[in-house]
Amino acid sequence: MKLDRVIAVRNNKTIYRDGDKCIKVFDEHYSKADVLNEALNQARIEETGLNIPKIFEVTMVDGKWAIVSEFIKGKTLAQLMQEDPEKKDEYLEMFVELQTTVHKATCPLLNKLKDKMNGKISKAELNATTRYDLHTRLEGMPKHNKVCHGDFNPSNIIVTEDGTPYILDWSHVTQGNASADAARTYLLFWLEGDIEGAKKYLDLFCKKSNTAKQYVQKWMPIVAASQSVKGNEKEREFLLSWVDVVDYE
Image 1 (spheres, rainbow, N blue to C red):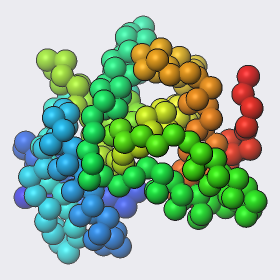
Image 2 (cartoon, rainbow, N blue to C red):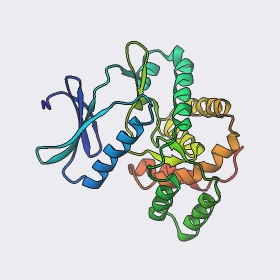
Image 3 (cartoon, rainbow, N blue to C red):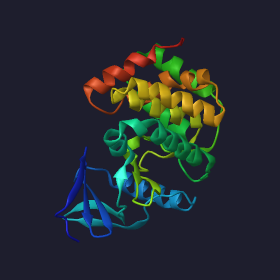
């Protein structure tokens, strides 16, 4: 395996390309269980028939865990939106179409979204009363078992030269309520500073999935609190500012 072509550097991991293979190498402190869980999640999603890179193997590289999967040649949807702003609405349409396709899939062996969120809310930097309120709100939300990507944003979609979109990065996938997944995507647009994009995205998602906007908005404080346990201080501050937002215009 040749690790001389870096294609991305993320927190705790570096991604390389070797011919038709993509090698994601985790740093030495990364949990073995988390690496194996990510690979298992991706393998399970492969079985749903969604368009994703196939896993070849889980291995060790210089004492570090690595996941080897198919390299998909193309541009991310984020790149395409940047290169051709006039077509952004068209790309957004494709983006939402893809997300609703993901939500139509089921995968009974995935971890449950509610369990993951409850665990994260418990660790959030919030007072006990606020945490209790969020746990209660979360428990009151309808239980679904749709595939939820967990980090669905334009940089996780690669479009090949023939126009086929592939969905990357299944490390956060769970089964649960699609509107929670949409709330997460909405907040990701905000974190990128694309507030207009966030609003257009939400309108489009609600229209295509026949979901009331208020319903997705009810998830936002819950999702923001659960996401606030990771990321840098600026992101945490932003996400925690959403936690007290109960009523929306």
